[in-house]
Image (cartoon, rainbow, N blue to C red; front, side, top):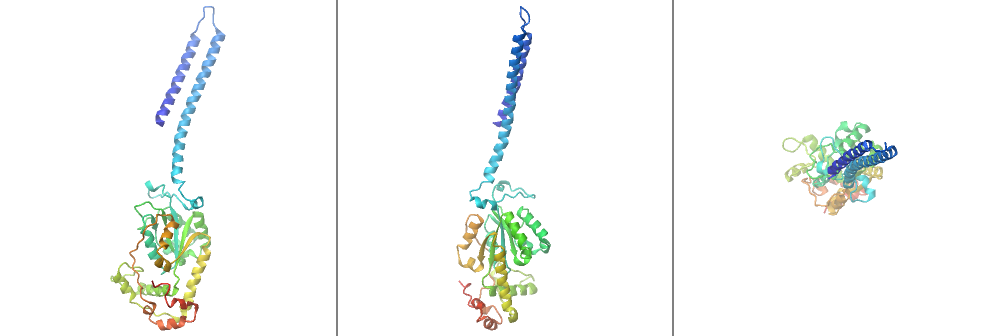
Length: 362
């Protein structure tokens, strides 16, 4: 319809010029039996010319208005669809519309995306938690991208990597067929995060990214898991001589659970103390971000935790699942080779609370 309007205005302009020219021609051809009628002819020519000028101006203005109206209408439509999601005003800075260079988001271009970071420590349930999130059709978390040393050599390489990630030019197995509404990574404290924490916090706030802080209350269990994982990294106990930090079958889990670490009593309490210090420091340094703090034990026990996480990320709440199979499920005395010595060491200290395992057993 806009095209027809433009054509009509063009015809109007042409017709107006022809009419004006015809009148001018007629006026100049007028003759009087008593001689030339100069004043009348001049006046007529002036008014005809003025009328022609007005009609031309109106037609050109109409053409301009119609073209501007078409452009404005398209821009306004895009703005209304992509820039006005139904969220509180203060949350709009966390909604993004990435434009990847390597592919076209197509029908998902106007689906707002929230940028996320899962901050955690090794053997704190973050791998399992990430697979839970990735079971959601609208969430894509791309793993520990900073486990690659070159990406965290300095703050410049870190920020360049984050820029590439959040442009969504980062294709991994976490990519989805559905429109992605939450997109990010998993980041361990020892992967350059704490060394450059101030620059990273500033970047995340500037970028409008949301942080999930995930830790494990029972740092003794975490330490046992770290020792067992390090042992398997060296010995590669599974068939085929491969190391797996996470397994997807009960048989593999049973094989890995057979190893019982003998804990170094001289470093036991310092190791627990160091882990707790790292958690407190991280919580303090990231307190100024838009964040949510979780504990592994709560994710296991509280059925509402995952719903709150999905609400935090602004995605539809649904049941999440994971193929991960837990490796160490036995009571603590069955997991440590020198359990009696460990128990004696921790009894009477503030870490004795870890011995009864009350915050883990269902």
